[in-house]
Amino acid sequence: MSLSRSIKVAGKGLRELRRGGAGAAMTRTVRFAYRRLGVESLEVPLLSEDIADSTRLDLPVPPIPPDRGSRLTVGWVTNPPSLGSGGHTTMFRMIAGLEAAGHRCVIFLYDRYGGDVAQHRMIIRRGWPEIRAEVLDADDGVAGVDAAVATGWESAHVLARRGTAPMRRLYFVQDYEPYFYPRGPEYALAEDTYRFGFRCIALGRMVASELRTEVGIDPDVIPFGCDTDVYRMAPAGPRTGIVCYARPGAARRGYWLGGQALAEFQRRHHDVPIHVYGDAPRSLPFLAVRHGRLTPNELNALYNTCIAGLALSFTNISLVAEEMLAAGTIPVINDAPEARADLENDHARWARPTPTAIADALSELVETVDPDRVEAAAASTRRGWTVAQSDVVRIVEEETYGRQLVN
Image (cartoon, rainbow, N blue to C red; front, side, top):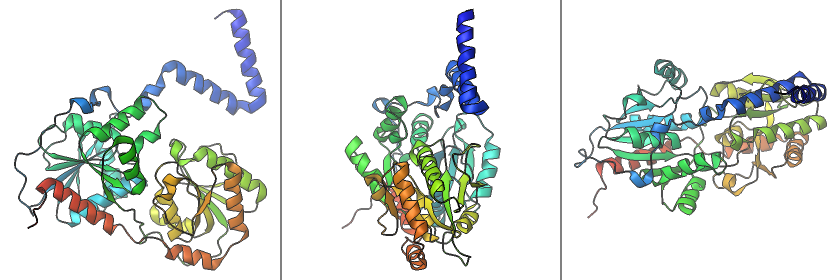
């Protein structure tokens, strides 16, 4: 680097330090290193050898189906879960439904970064102790099952590439995952999975609608539920706070927008505590009580101290919204047809997705606390996941045994 160039870089760094402090200068340095080192390639959650192509697939199915009523072995292909993961929790509920129906399940973990399967297995046993499923490494292949279920776009590619033994293949679709990305390679690879020929089970009307209009397939549809055994009103003191789930790495959860809205809310209501749980970064644009990762029971206890919460989602509705309602906490949600499609609830508060509009909605809720509204919100939620579980059992059995002829 020339002397003049070095002077310019140093001067720019000094101005950055003066303007934003050491944190801003460090952020700039990290961003520069990120681009120069090509680290973004590590964020692609799929190894190149695991990419499938819908135009080249010819996957075998069993020539003879198992005897109707026999115990099935059903594989579930997924990435390793972290404690509290909502998508994994919903998947495990479906596994629990199959196990309760007498079937055996096997979880095939796909870790693009080569993590320790034994460690992942311990996390599953700790976080979802009701699950009896065997936990195996997808690197060893997806085999020995009557049917296998992909649970996300990455696992759909893995099932297509590594599940080449004769079996029935299904796809549990909890969100329209191309929308997780800008138009580009990940968007295209995610969209292609819906053309693999797997039988798609869509969670809710929004996902089903997108599959029909964007891809041209007609999926099975199962309804949302709410775990009201955990999320419910509990005897507690007065509600005083606001609660927010922080997930900075998932743009669809609106973390940055929520942070700006909460900063504006705090300027108006500096006496109202703001509670943050999840993966909140060290730097927040507002003062907050940090809770880190919480168990469902701990989270329900927190909800029961709060007046309102943020439940932003720019694709399928977040489970957080109805779980808050079940605990009597009023969720503020960005107003969008995708979010409204699967939450028809008069107690949810919808807001235009701008910091000011969201702060307005939160302010109105804390300024007009109504105990009757709290009880009505808790009574308005769906009860349990038994309908969805029964539907999944029926669909898996129908796909594996074959359709039963009706005289």
